[in-house]
Length: 143
Image (cartoon, rainbow, N blue to C red):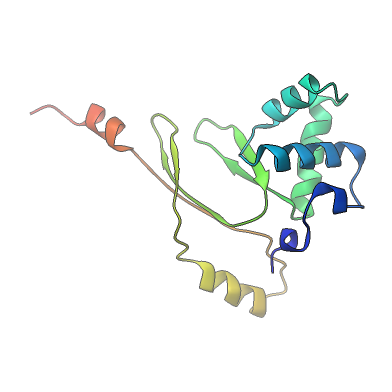
């Protein structure tokens, strides 16, 4: 069972600092992947006093607690979301477009590892990298 399946909202998370609660609540409200910079900007616009370094520390702590997952984009930027489900993507190396994949070919492996290893798995990601159709068309050699 995923840790967040036990938790409904940031209000029911008593062991979080004020900053962690702010970050978690924003991710919950937005329900989309966000960069640390965009989280910082949103909180700043909401008049919530929190520094960028604190946002990064909060995200790291939330990751360690299994409440937030991170995914690196081809440009090196990290995107953060709440850990509700595992994520799978097709990502274009040229334009950076990411398309979600709804199937999970490794769920049985995760289940097996959860039972056989001494390791608490919070989530997994699976990402395929290549070129989307428009970028592949642009990079195809002309005949």
